[in-house]
Amino acid sequence: MRLNAEHIAYAQDTEALAKFAKALGHPTRMAILKYLKKQSCCFTGDLVDVFPLAQSTVSQHLKELKSAGLIQGEVYPPKIKYCINQENWNKAKTLLQHFFE
Amino acid sequence: MRLNAEHIAYAQDTEALAKFAKALGHPTRMAILKYLKKQSCCFTGDLVDVFPLAQSTVSQHLKELKSAGLIQGEVYPPKIKYCINQENWNKAKTLLQHFFE
DNA sequence: AAGGTCCATCGTAATTTTACGATAATAAAA
DNA sequence: TTTTATTATCGTAAAATTACGATGGACCTT
Image 1 (cartoon, helix red, strand yellow):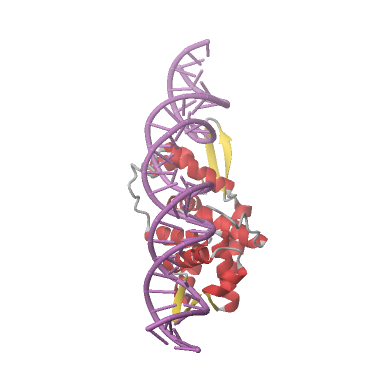
Image 2 (tube, chains in turn blue, cyan, yellow, brown; image 1 turned 180 degrees about the vertical axis):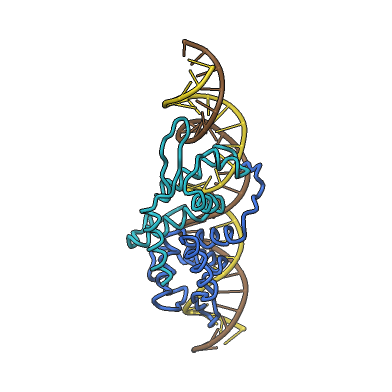
């Protein structure tokens, strides 16, 4: 990127929406979230069993979902329980609803 | 990518949702769509005037939105009028609604 | 204290994305 | 026919993403 447009400042909602959408924009992450909707919570290892991906890859996707705010992790040593972050989930839902009318 | 997981076959809806979300997952594309919602339609040049980006960059974003099915172009030489593709827009809306409950 | 389990993080490679300027294409206008 | 206006596409570079295996850290269990 040879960006003259260093970084464009978009409206806050625009940025927020794009960030959520970006996190949703990979089939594995979408599938993880669908899984979490059913199970409500799960451990990293559960997902590693479900998806034909390396443990580190799954962990990386979880990290991105977390940094987008869509999930949260809770330590149950030596495991980590991931759940949907309901607050941000609702925020994303509302933003998208408004976006689509 | 050193993919052992050559390409995972996810559920059709999962793939479709991820594809829509990916297109929405960049602030410029999100802003273009917001603009299109207000104006209903516009020419490429209108967007080039609005965004501090090179014409080729805007064109590239439009291409991605188009290939995701969210917009469509109609030729009014030498201009091209872009509008939201209502059918796929509704499809994305419905898929996302169901996804978020 | 030593070993085991689970998971994050590091290092790295391939690929994709994002951005630019330059060029090509198209069709109206001069 | 040549020029002009508008936009797509090409070539390219920088950065981000996606994937892997290997390593390390935290915390039980032995």
